[in-house]
Length: 635
Ligand code: PRX
Image (cartoon, rainbow, N blue to C red; front, side, top):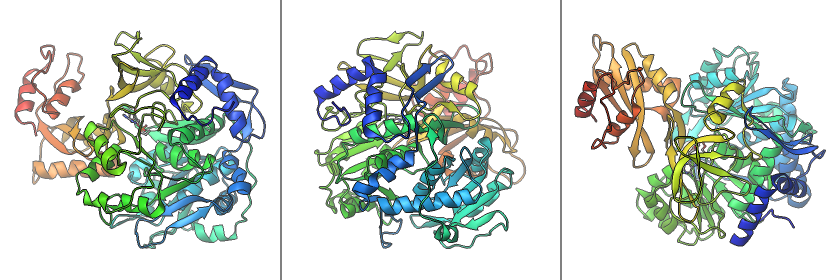
């Protein structure tokens, strides 16, 4: 019997048990029955979390684009694959069929080849949410090049760091991007980045906004004329299941961003299988995930997961507030969207606006609502459930990470009874564990601890590009034989999981992962700054916002503190991007430190959150007197 589509709770438990008792047998069956392979595997799973080393479907050969495109041509050739909704509602939406998408992917793949890109080469993609972005990912996958998408809100310095880290030879970008009523000049950000990227040989530029750009004579070319001449057929490169498919960077609590490496076979199987079940996707549905393809959510649940199931997937270029706060719901009505997947930060922002923006539209097409990226608070959950879902569309609170490749803990709609703020039960094949401070696994229910996963799953990242040791140290060294997620969680009386947030120095702001260390490094480069510490504090819309405590060297002539705050944020914007700007900056004379010189962030976090009734023991601090001063002047 195929377990590809789970339809009731008993079936979930039964399939879950099977997936845990015999993971190899279980995944082999799913892989065999629902995907096309050029060659079958020799071995389903090999793993050793000590090294760590994990392989799925070793020896198998495939091309993921044959699964996402070619195999649908005979049955769904005229079905819409990508439904592009532009930033400006007056611009017409584009319905790109599977046949057309196949042709366009092949054309772009042929262009990449003609420009010297081959199997294993890294290609950086820095594009807005336009069809060419999805096409570029698939074109790379078609020829076996490894895509590294960088979110087009990152600064030129952040872009350059990512290009150089994995040694990309090409960048695909556009002349500009539309976001609400703004037009951003992406090409000049790329130009600035490339001043420090000697490895880049070619830049392909998509025309989107028509703004003037400078084209570097030997390096840069407009993409359209090249595409026009390219043939619409391109033989798919045959890939090993364990060949890298893409690199995607995520912030760590320290050091430079980590290039998570995902591979072809397991990633395809797991993203497709989770997509089918967690969105209860059916053939006639129109699925919309509002994430940007610059993040893992977009990779797995706008592009690969949906297309592998032959779905219609909406790509939205705009923002929820343009031309007004009804835009999401206008798009739902217009395209009769059936599954809607977004982030709590967007829900909170929309919940602040008049309900009229929701009530104006017919949302009766919606069947399933999704949430991802950060814990969803109870108020936002109810607002979403009552007003968008009309208490009829279950909310799937999906917990997962860039590193996990696919959704790990989530209800299955119409199958798992939901509870606000709970991600509920592990998905099929996922074996979570909660660990206490001593490194012991907490068994039984009604416990809370650090969330680990104790058995491999097909879409887990295999390494950090160029730094396998760091992969080991970050994820596999805290607890023996377990993948450590960096999150805290509790398991309630019925075994449901609730994710309580990060337990390391990563802060999630508006659903974006931000490491404190790179932001502090950026602040410390300001000539007036001696030292700084960043912590998160609760924010109505963003979930968390950033609070910086900054020690100045000396302010210097003609500078005041207000200007300095602006300069510090300007510097962060230039080095990382506007998403990492600080909401509050407090200038302090010292930072609370332990005798070994470590900043006691716990205290700063409490001060930033205005929760100073119990600061805990501060007598062990090197400089307890500074705490009083910081508290008095807290913002
Ligand atoms: O802390 C968890 C939070 O987001 C982190 C992963 O971020 P990133 O790699 O950017 O991937 C985001 C999209 C998958 C996690 O370690 N997180 C993600 N989803 C949830 C969540 N926290 C609570 N509930 C969620 N549903």
